[in-house]
Image 1 (cartoon, rainbow, N blue to C red):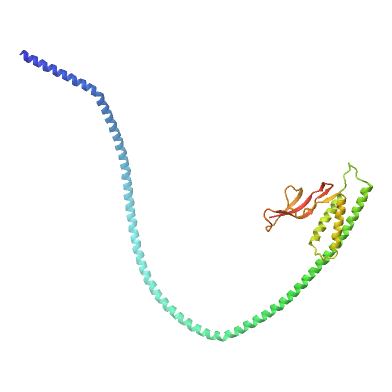
Image 2: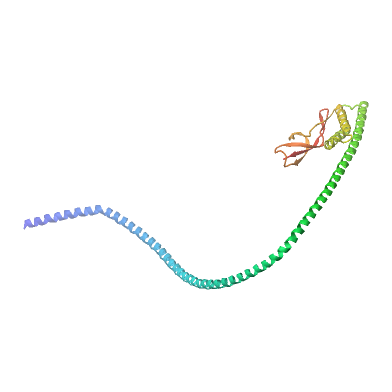
Length: 319
């Protein structure tokens, strides 16, 4: 009996010890179990969200499928209506083809009849034209001969009149140039006389240092020299009195220079921006690109004893 009790106690103690060990193991595994449960809940939540998102996507797909089914039904209805139209058009084409064949046959018959009538009329016209053609050829040749004769006579008359007019123009131009030369010769004589009087007056009453010299006459002479030189360049060398005028101009220029005046030669020179002058620019498409020449002197530049007393007024030609 004691042995039984001892054995029972021994097994009870063993079971109690084993139970305590299992409890301690369970206590140690509880955090791990809790962590696994938490992770599984997160995964369940994530799967729930995915499920809801998938349900939304499936709803959209279902709506798209319904829309496509509706469109498919509309296309079927449209296809049926098009098939009906094609059938009607085919029937109309068949009817039109029959009408075209009938009309073509009728037109062919009418064209054949018209051609036969036209051929008969053309034959009749050919016979009448053969008779009249010769008369027309003769009349045309006679007209051409008369026209050529009239043209030759008129050309000869016009040429003769043109020669007479050109001769009259040349004679008139020559007489006008001669008169112009005479007038310029008289003007040069007057200017020379005035210059001599001015020189004598200066000798009698010399200009003091504080008194300004009177250049009015000198400037007038300079302007007239430029004008006469421009006219001389346009005249024929055979013009009566031209040599005498050239000599007079040369003489008055020498007299001009002897009194301390300088007439600056600018015609034909290259223009530059540094020139002290009043400039009128003239465009010429045939002029060399980038080149600017002084082609006309309106008023000359006049210097007195090295000092400019009149600014030039010039015309410059450029491209």
